[in-house]
Image (cartoon, rainbow over all chains, first blue to last red; front, top):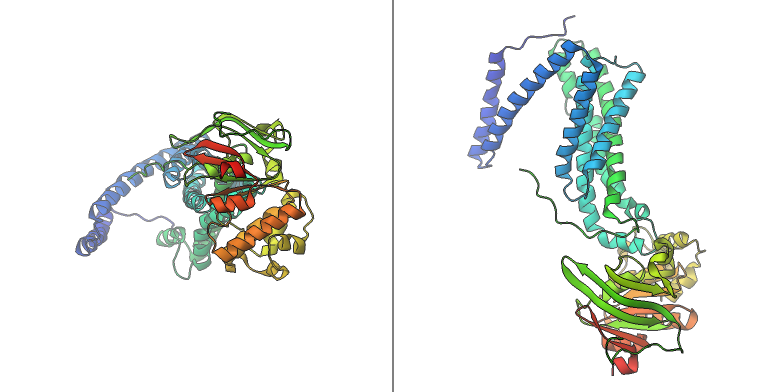
Length: 263
Length: 232
């Protein structure tokens, strides 16, 4: 069975009709998103084309070190991106970097160790990208929530510290809610997968001509890998980042002015 | 002492806290400025207008914040030499607004008692804070502000502290609820050997609940001594 299809450039160009439709709806409803849609479209073309060539190069060279370098770059840029969404969390970059590295390393290490995938660029690059990308989103959501909650729950946390609780004990309910918010989106989408939406990998495989059984099996593996990585990243990010709200003497630090969010 | 209105405690009462040149800034603004004061064992009230630095002073005493300048002694030892968590179980603070943990009154009291490693005498602790034993099973989210504030007091008492820091504990309450809390505090002083340090903007309340009084204005100590002299 063939699992490859050829997509001509004119087919990609034709799909831009739907982008024009999105821009037209925005213009008609004065949603003021036309410029953003245009930027998003151009960026998606440039970024994916560059990534396509980069992946082709990595596949051709077939070096595990190059793969690891690429994954490290993904972790670095993932942490930088997620940091902007965690603007209310002081010193969030370190926890995010560790969270993404740990989530990516553990998840990929396990799928290779269990013999699910071969340790070759063809598997590690796309799976690593998905794992680190989802870990980034989950840890960003979790820390965003942590920043809001630590502000809202300040009085309760300090009242708990005043009883002689440790910083970990005082922040526990807040950390728990933040962890949950980082994980819940993927848990919910895993629950409804196949019913309300078809996940991307499965759609891609079906379009490429793979059998539905293979497509489903691969999708299940990826969903479970993502669940693992999202849990590890959200747990690590919240467990490390909450400490930055406290001094070593278990005192709440004064809130800092929030950093300017990027456009 | 920096001027004649500041009286030393003298030999008749032990010094609980001693503050020397204590200063603290927040957001580039001086909140407490060169505070020299003594707080004796017993009942002390800290009075002054809003923004005088009263609550900040109280938070300094159980190390929820540390001063940027100066030194504080507790029972003749530097406050910084005390392990903060152990200190807070001995010097308990009841904040101005109730901030209980989700759950029942009993679960809050038990949490505090467990932290301090103390057995919980539920009924007695509730009674000391002026609460009926039937409150034990009540969800704290369904209590009135006055009931929540008394639960906060009971929660602090569950740790069997030696010093109780009270930050305007009746400011959000109506007169009836205020009287109940004040009666509970008076009862506490009779029944337990607890020193109380109460922050209040109400001079009449300070007169009722403080034997020794500190008066703050704009972060500076403008008076300290027996209540008859400071609040004359």
